[in-house]
Image (cartoon, rainbow, N blue to C red; front, side):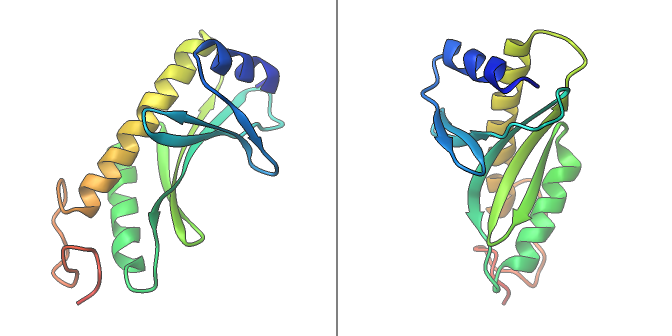
Amino acid sequence: MDKNEVLEKLEVLGFDIEEVPDFGYIFKFEGLTLLYMPDDDEDFLRFAAPNVFDVTDENRAFVLEVVNETNLTIKYSKVCAYGEQVWVFYEYRMFGGELEDIIEHSLYLLRATVALFHRKVEGSDIEVNENYDEKGEES
């Protein structure tokens, strides 16, 4: 996807965009920090919600279980343990359509995915494994 076209659409939608070297462009959406991550593939669009949850040695197994449950529940986005953080990505292959509509869909879906992930961490929407306490730490 043409980076400049996406950046222009984000500005039209009212976002204050800042470049983050080696990552992309950062902006805020309804309290979330999001990244637009340009790619060399002209048909590919990627956004991310970085650092939505901390991964520690103590909670890693629980977090990976929740990541998997969230990925099985929601479409278009994926939750990943990325280093010591959980990130949510939205990836889309452009088949046509209005870029502005696709961007809006991606932002709302990222927000929904982050919320779903957090609900699952808190014990809503999944059965918490008996080996984990309410904070997601192994007991």
